Amino acid sequence: MFWSGLVSLVDAWSVPEYSHGPIIPLISTFLFLREMRAAPPVDRPVTDRWPGVAVLALGLLMGLLGNLVRIPDITTYGFMVWIAGLVLISFGLRRGAIFWPAILHLVFMLPLPQFVYWQVSVGLQAVSSQIGVALIQAIGIPVYLDGNIIDLGLYKLQVAEACSGLRYLFPMLSFSYVFAVLYQGPVWHKIVLLASAAPITVMMNSFRIGMIGVLVNYFGIEHAEGFLHTFEGWIIFVACIVILFLEAMLLQQLTRRPKRLSETLDVEFEGLGVQARRVLDVVPSAALIAAAALTSAAAVGWAAAPEREIVRPDRELLVFFPRVIEEWRGAPRLLEPEIERVLGADDYHSAGYVSEVSGASVDMFVAYYHKQTEGNGIHSPEVCIPAGGWEVSRWRQLEVAVDGAAPFEVNRAMIQKGLNRQLVYFWFEQRGQRLTSDYAVKAITVLDSLTTGRTDGGLVRLITPLEPGEDEALGDARLQQFMQAMLPRLSAFIP
Image (cartoon, rainbow, N blue to C red):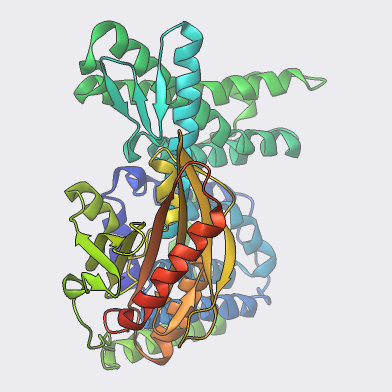
């Protein structure tokens, strides 16, 4: 029942940002055995096991849903709920509730949904770049930031995805969580320790980027590459942990009776082996037998069920998208290999169209995905455009009416880089529906996967440049005129 989720989880651990994943279950096991000392064996019958069966059944349902819609993350979360149910069955609701810190800690081994990951990653890249450049400028080094490119004149440094800080943030969040659980002090101390992990990591990663810029400026580009780059990253991670310890010591000084740090952390391993052997003393109960029967029935039922095939509709390849659309003449172009890799689309069309009547231009980009599950998904322009150094005005929804089609909304924004201004429209083409929200796309994809077996979909993005002093309304009219000619042809390529 949970196999697909666990396989996907192990695959995710091969990504540097999630390489800490295999350690998380070991730490959760330590937290679990530690709490078992507070739940010694009892002689009286345990009468509150059945709520655990309900929780376990919920986990099985989540696993089933994840398998049906082919989203392994849902299956993996279902496995965590299943474990929680098993604990409540074994110890009863009242005694089993004390194990919630160990079970909740398992969340840190799970990858973020892809569309959330890209939003967080690009956001952290932007923040780290800006703070890093501010640090370089404070030292007196001339520097210019263009998107995620730090221009030092002789050298240019790209603050890539690997420099976003996520590979430090995720393990640091886990460490701060465990630190807060083991910390012996007021609850508000624990909250401060846990909440400070993200700001500490972001600031230290920004400091790292700034220091790399300084070292490159004085000693050469090799300080941004290879072993030195990796070594500098490990120094920053260790520094984040040291700062967390210093923060705990400072918090202790705010109490009436400050303790030494060694006294504030309950890191006691003695007796854990004895607690682990208690697993062998578990006595079968009616609730445990019911849980085993439910789990076995669900596993056998899913294994025996016929495999659901992904429905792939008939469609034209985007390479055949018209180069001439009424008065518009297009010139297709290929994306750079690295952009293609990050995009992950199964098919795409990128072209610049020019009106033979007015000479105005529209840049059109269409991406198509055979499936938007199993870790696949669309990269929203809301994330990608700022990474290119463009300043974006607030995105808003604009209703567009095109002859022959029902009115629908598009995302609209004005973007600017220096003196260059451009007007952007984009929306998601989703199996006959046009949506503006990433979250709505995910929700409708889950529903359609259950009802029709289709999870394909696409993205359409249109951009037109504005001349100096040109009114935005003229740009809107231009894009909507192009849409009037283009949309009737689009359905053959994104059904």
